[in-house]
Length: 176
Image (tube, rainbow, N blue to C red; front, top):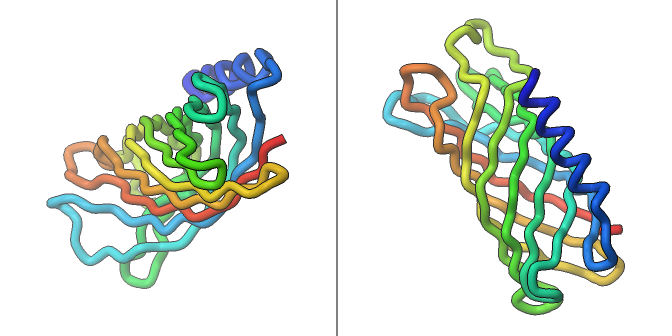
């Protein structure tokens, strides 16, 4: 819970330091999530969602931006026709390059804190998740964007088990 408060405070402070070149936005969409690793078998992808806010800081105006985000992401996997879900409060920090005004590439690290799950035996579940992410955005006039992002887990979901998240996010965002 302490990490959650720290993450919210950090993003709040970022949001308060506005200048004209910075943009605040909201983003949401669908997750296609699964887990992979040498200790994983018999799992299938599941569909869930993510939603959050972000702030875009110009490093090189109209070209290179740093974009911290705060989002809730429902991840997990499907096994035996049951969705096993783990909800995370995540803090991605993306470096975003605008190739053209309409196309952008992004990449960066992401940390997550588990806030809920539906697993029967969750004593073995790690509370923190570290990942790297990369994606592509299509940016339209008036602040609307469509994006695709791949998130690859770096830490094991379960203690003493090689099982990491793999998530494809497809969604939309709007900058104010």
